[in-house]
Image (cartoon, rainbow, N blue to C red; front, side, top):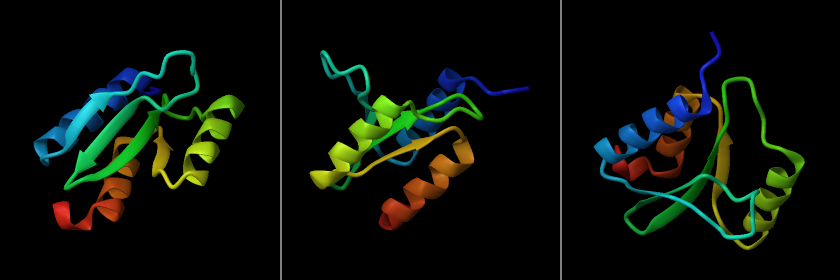
Length: 96
């Protein structure tokens, strides 16, 4: 059975909070393509877009992520709790 976006997002956010991360829903008025959430640990901020299992970001979302990266922001997307955890461990090795 395909895992829903909300289920993946909730599990990832709970895991991050359990590991001492500041977690907030990200809302950018007028920008439907903005990533879903902000995560911060020790002053390092990353944005994450969550997708249902097997889904990928839309072209508009990909373009938004590329623009954010061009300004030095860290942003990634995931459709998997395990991939989220691995990515966070790579970005924040000191937190684990």
